[in-house]
Length: 561
Picture 1: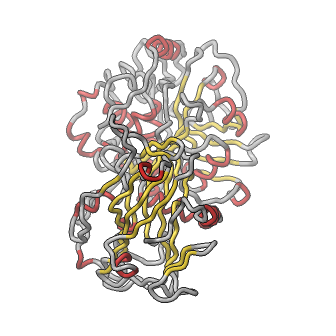
Picture 2: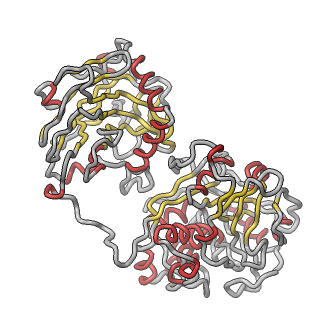
Picture 3: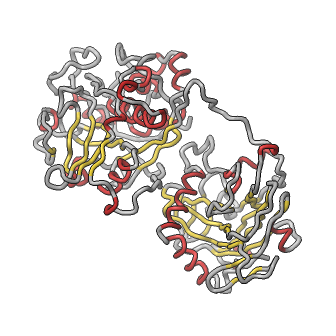
């Protein structure tokens, strides 16, 4: 597991721990509190850097006007419980509440199911499994969001039936038992994402039945809150101190609650606190004051996608074999994408050699138009994307086995037969050559990806074959120029040493950005959903039109060769 490097000054950590010890005991915690620990534990170290956590690109509601006026996910939650005096709040918010809720949604759990400890994720197991270091406080006293989410993704977490929240001790990872880890493997998350820190984005997630984990700074009046009214302001920080950071989960909203509308938040301080363990927080106060920021100034708001399996399910299905393929099966393939600076003297100019194969049993016809395109997208915000070229496969106004590039599009009337390929049908060659220039405004970490059948016209057994990534890691671009990867000053270039073979498993490594190095990268499903959403709202076509105008520049030769 890659090591998280999250820095925080030692004196700041001590202040957090010291301030949490000033609180008076007012409830009976789930676990017997030590004499020197308060009953209300906090537990967020407040030292997050979420800059390399991808933004959630899932959509369901295009605007605030078509969102429900209220939505409540409380039915997906286990019973409200208490973290006691320990600083385990994030493991409670992320594990006990939100991970349990995602499994309730995945498996259709009802209230009777959620009352069973075998269906509740253990905050003790999750917190104890965290490695000691800057992201985990000593003696069960604090952790970061990143380390909790990473552990849920890579290891998972056991249930309360196996690891009840009692006898926490010092929470050392060395105390983890093998039976805990075995069960944890059945309760993983697929990925975790940040969301924009605005009211609409949070409501959008909730209305899509996705609870949101968040980081907050508490004041004195929060500690004694015991009301169904809307919480809308801080008071003093005399009791809690200036560094009372806490993690909770947002599980609902109501536009008509209070003056401005409010979010429903579940706490881990037991049902005697707040409104049966919940609190309603004013929209404006939530965003402007209550919600805390990471080191980049972004609100700490995260979601997760479930990857739990039941005991009867197979965690690793058998690989696809040719006998299982039916119909059209398009496969994107890139032989190389290299810088052409040495000949063009333009740092942003490049050359691509690619092909599209059909490994299916039916021809990929053009009677129903389909397309293929080469795009770049931001590794941490896929909504930041651009189109390098777009090809429409159609028989409208184009002769068979010919192509026409007009002001609006490049149209190709090419049917790819079973076990055939695009380049051979069009030119009788091994690949298609495209010369292109990236925009000089391109700065940051991006992936380059070739996608066949981007509108999902053909229903294929293995849709992942439609994608081809030219790199395992995102490429750092500066003013459109790929990052220099070595001391000899060469630009980023991809040269594929693997010859295409539909029987070869080696081709699978090009199908996704998600790998051992980047387990939390966007999946192909997320990228496809992003493209689908941008096609629906018209943004994709705008980029296609902008691209077609740009290709008229002699330096942009996107016509196939």
